[in-house]
Each structure stands twice: as C-alpha cells, then as structure tokens.
Length: 219
Image (cartoon, rainbow, N blue to C red):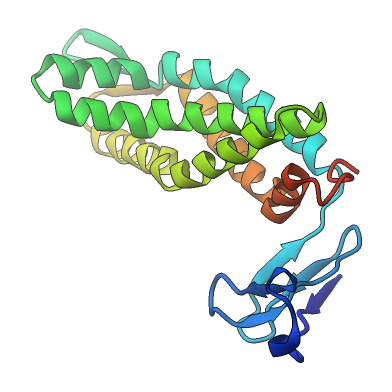
C-alpha cells in the first residue's frame, strides 16, 4: 500500500514530528505506517518510508550470505587467459598484487579499498548493527556503526569493478582463449546480494530500532 505523506499544518508541529524528502526537500508530517505500507512524497513521488516485515532477520540472512560469498568472490579465479601457450588465472586479489608489484602502489591501494576493504567493512558494520538490535545489546555502538556504514556507502564500488572485468573480457575475447571462472559467478552473486540488502534493510526502521523507538523491527 502506498500513500502520500501528509503535508498539512507542518508549521505547528514539533521538529520530531517532521521529515524532509531526500529528493525535493519538501517538509512534511512524519508518517505512521502499518506493516507492509510505504509512504511517498506528494511532490516528487520519492519513497520516503517503507515498513517491511522481519527486517532484522531477513537482513541478517543476506549479510551472512554476502560474507560467505566474499572470500570466493575475491580469491577464486574470475577468468583464465591462455595466450601463446601461456595461461594465467586472475582474481581480484591478484589484480591488486599485480598493480602493487608494477609500481602503482597508489592505484593498488584504491582498488583494494573500493573492491575489497570497504565492502567488507560495510558488511561487518551491518552485521554488528543487526546483532545489536536482535540481541538488544550495545545499541549506542550500533548507532555509531550505522553512521559509519552510511559514510562508507559511496566508497564501495563493486559494480564499477565488475564493469571493468566485463570490459576486459570483451576486449580480450578476440586476442586469446578466455574462460570465465567460478570467482566471477561469486562476485556477481555478492553484488546482487548487497543490492537486495540495500532494499530489505529499511533505514528508518533500523534507526528507530537502534534508538529504541521501534521494538518490533524484526516482526
């Protein structure tokens, strides 16, 4: 169910009852939603809030799945290249090491952070936040970690790395014998799980659960 957010008499409401649209900055009354409902901005149609079922449990399952995929996605061969009788198997980690060994330490550091370091840190932050809600412990630390996670969101660039891999495959396909490895399937799966996690892990429900406003975020 989708309903526009009420914008009437916002000037008379206290600040804690107001919310601004993330897209068009329209100031409006904070909506009260039942399970399964979502609220849309009446000006631009942006989805303001969505009250989803079992947010914590579903998000935990996706985070654990992503962590299980992390190691094979980064350390199993993405592709195998055969050229002039020589073959090589390339992984995400071997690409970072190759850049470092060829004197491009700065580029290697950026690739490592954006494709391996920050995505792992994001997943660990999400796991700690969800566990703090699920077990009702350390919610003040959960608030801090969730803020850190939001600052890291724009720095995890798995989709950019995947695009680079696909471009390399297309360009090398006519020059050498090329075969796709299991690592690529795991990498794509990891990316898809993280995209789904962004959808399922409703931010406003997580913030409310961490601040103690919503004790039923897992329902």
